[in-house]
Image 1 (tube, rainbow, N blue to C red):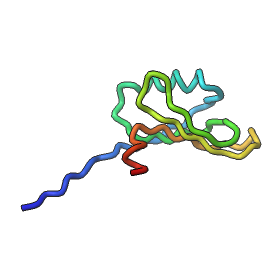
Image 2 (cartoon, rainbow, N blue to C red):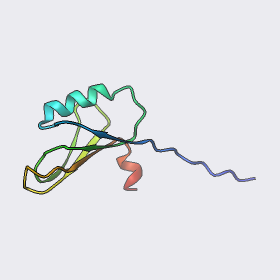
Image 3 (cartoon, rainbow, N blue to C red):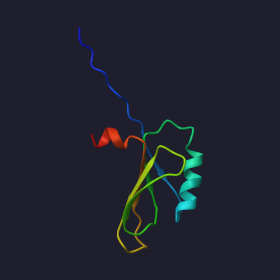
Image 4 (spheres, rainbow, N blue to C red):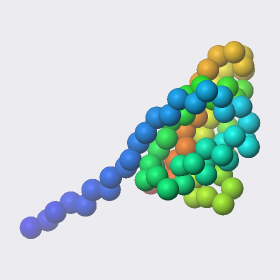
Length: 87
């Protein structure tokens, strides 16, 4: 009998007070290194514009998007399953 294989994806959210630069993102990455989270949505990021970056010494990719007005809060997404999402 056929038994389908399901991959489990762990998703979490984190509300940070202020993640205003890439150095703070590296600190967050170190704090989360031992977690089993595949996708992490980070709120109150305060970064302008949109973009994507690979994190240093990590398999994670960080996506962020938001308006140009720095007073508006928006969300960044940290993921290590980029290839599975976009296949």
